Length: 105
Image 1 (cartoon, helix red, strand yellow):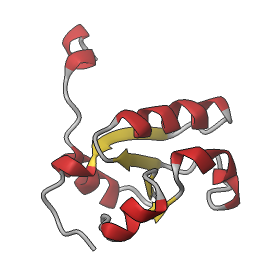
Image 2: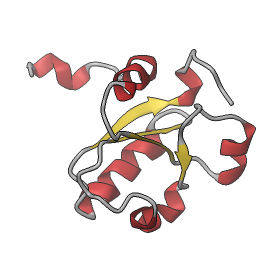
Image 3: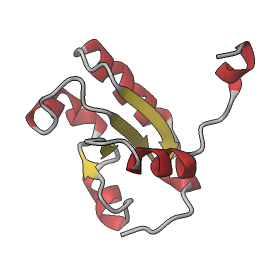
């Protein structure tokens, strides 16, 4: 990874595509319940950022590949930080659904 990669913007569209090719990957939406009900990426699960401490009830294996999104990317970055502190080793913030061009359910 070069120094400029640190400034590269994450593309949620590419990341969702990548996620589909990763066996056992989980797509995690950390927006609140109402936001999730208003529209989410198909196949995602919802655990609001405020409830992220309960993620182990749903994703018990800390090595599971988890792709995390929110509305614009801020909450997903916070969730990834908290999950890493809990011992999750394979979590990634993929940005926000506001930039997503695929199907919304």
